[in-house]
Image (cartoon, rainbow, N blue to C red; front, side, top):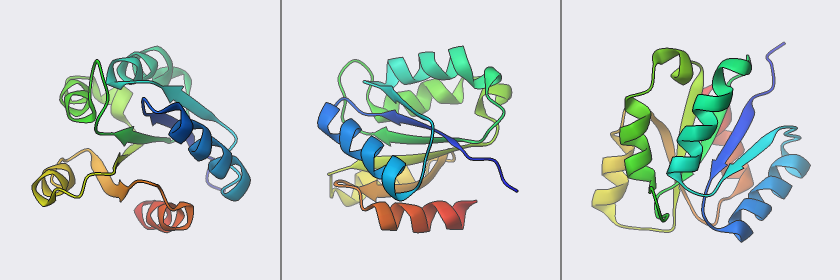
Length: 132
């Protein structure tokens, strides 16, 4: 039996955080959801918690955020040790429809997939299943 993943939502929009948290709990039966308001908080959470958690980590990462945006997060994430990056999938979130930005995101070796906001929980579940 596969262990349930731990989720980390990195998004500065508290409404999006609330909606994703509720959807994940109710529709996907997710039990552990952690929140970070920007990429810097997300990196700190990973550094403080990843080695304490044996379960897979699923990160939902917004692109446009203050302090550290999603693209800068990916640059900083690249510098982390492999022990912190083990068994982790990153899904990028954006309301952007810029084709160049989407292709740039999809070509990043750490990004499992790109999801448009507002997130469709069924679409996310389908993509999550195909990536596991």
